[in-house]
Length: 67
Image (cartoon, rainbow, N blue to C red; front, side):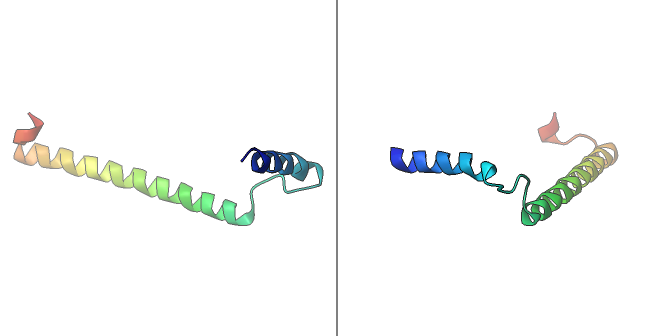
């Protein structure tokens, strides 16, 4: 296990020195953009649900579980 760890760490140190990629790949960038879009959509849905709950409370009064 320690030999594998040593090889892994050494390869990590050597890669940037040998001109390895310094930034995320295009696939990683694409996935990050998708994550950002989904986070925004989730936030918007959360706001809508809160508005619906407030509207229902106003019309129907508080529920037994909310007391």
